[in-house]
Image 1 (cartoon, rainbow, N blue to C red):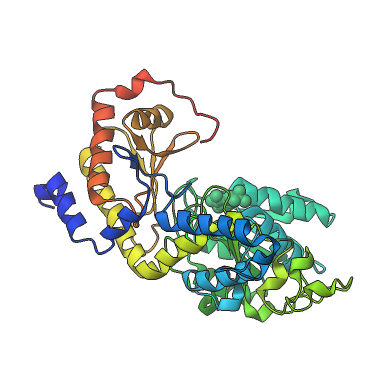
Image 2 (spheres, rainbow, N blue to C red; image 1 turned 180 degrees about the horizontal axis):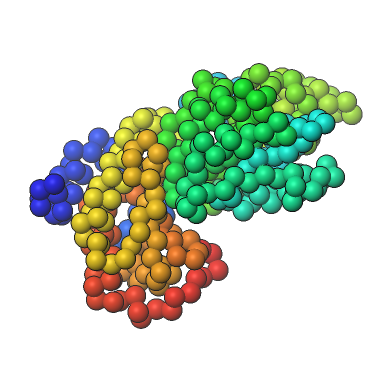
Length: 426
Ligand SMILES: *Cc1c(COP(=O)(O)O)cnc(C)c1O
């Protein structure tokens, strides 16, 4: 590596060569602030704002008729957005729907697909899973009268950061009925090999579903080609759908016709819903897994946001994301080697998701010092710093600036001005 690699001039050169650079202007970016938290809450774009306002206006102007009239009739919105998002997960248009949240969708999918039979009555997850996923699985087991202590099997991590796919496969015993795993681990950013895990699960007649919260909008997926059974995710991280944005779910068409575990009148075939019959005629595609009235205003920003992903192309987004994080790793190795940071994300491109994960004993107050320097990181208790350079709106120059600031914080011991304690949301 030549010394030139580590100069701001080089970073600016990379920005000039960046084919996605123009998207930065589409977002509301605060002057003098560097936002590296797009993997927790993505920023607002002008197009997302526009579609939210347009939805509000359809309510103002159309009242009840907004369900079937206007630019985006509400009655068909969940399905339409599912079609629009399908290419991002590699699903067919009628395999994807925008509804619920990560947690409620997981409940729905487990209620639908976990069908314990004889000895095959356990769920397999992992020790590093996001807590809400584990809570949902525990309550689904309890609802069936099964003890989560014995019926929720969690694959251990050898180092507390990554999972080993061989260990997961080894845990696929005859007793496992369903597997729930993340596509990308929320702390280390490790990408699991979804194709391989799905193949191995199916060899053992186990159904498998993935939590895509950290991969949706960040990396490409081929869920249908890999034959994944189902998946679920939130849209407020890399997809920039806004705080509390409606989530999404995918069900492989092989399972169409299955009775939804948690039914509601929006599970209905669209042309039968207003028959108001007490006998549900469920939709014959993914629509069956919706429950109630869609949260129209909370889904509206996605219309504009998804348009940008379609236009920019997820392959291009992934390419830039890898360049940004790869560049950041180079700079961290070079500039921060004297300061006790441990890089906990995978280094190679095939396994690395969209963010960098550093550990440091002083992480909480280093994050506070970053904030005091107008840089927004993401602290993960007890000693983790997540930094997400996002392809659609961050720059190589910002990556350079963040690493230089981290260096100054350590060198000048700026972090010592703060308490090493976490805030409420972190
Ligand atoms: C962000 C995230 C969630 C959040 O679930 P909600 O229902 O949207 O609150 C769940 N799982 C993972 C892995 C996440 O990263």
